[in-house]
Image (cartoon, rainbow, N blue to C red; front, side, top):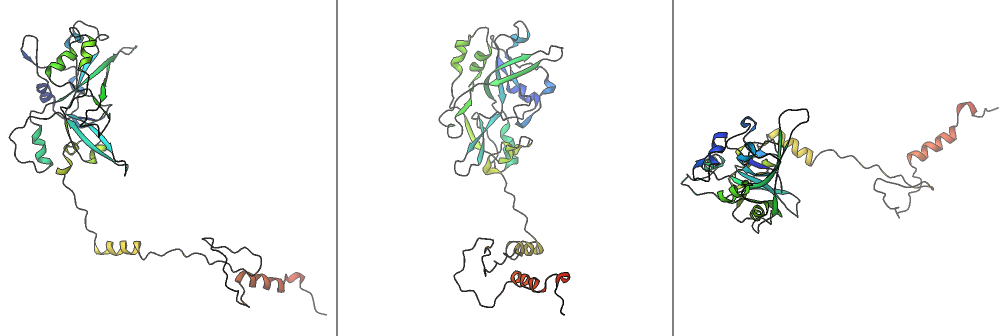
Length: 302
């Protein structure tokens, strides 16, 4: 499974999207640790900072070495399907089905951004670790997303998918390591069919591209027409493709003796009779040199 995700919501919106109810039924918002490190993006790579939910107990009573369960948040994740014939890859954006709200007709990428109102975040089960530098300094947090076999609907795109926690109850159980044992929590790790996806533009292939086009359905992307070439450019292109000078093949030597006959394409020996009296340039030059000889050795007439 590819580790590329989208999490573009601003900090305050993301906080409201993670609202939950405590054991007394009161609605609460999660508290941030190092909020300045969060950078919203439509195209997050595995090495970027991503929002992760942890139990509050990790920062109050229980050491970080115990109960290392976490929930990784994202709008959705990207996956690539490889075409066996062309070997090209088609990217897809995978996310939770969203509650339909009355929206204007979506006809382009600029309208697609309006769908993100009240977006349901994708909640993926993970485990985390915390490393403290021996020389002192800030703690380094890292995480890994747990993967499972893909559900039937996603199997044609990729054989693996993240373990998705579907619903607030599943998220609470996974994080509550004090009350829910590891064996009980592992029952939440399984493929889910409650997902949807759509193909997106190859613009997402480059992790430096951070635009709404990364998540926009491919059929809504505006296809830009190639600029029409000018008259002079068309003539130049025509000349390059059809009338460009070609390097002539060297003429093969004619065989008049036992000299090897060759050509660029190793043509077979011709069966036509050699024309009498015809001498190649090399043969004539050698004959002339032989007749004249060096000036110093030319015999003197008495």
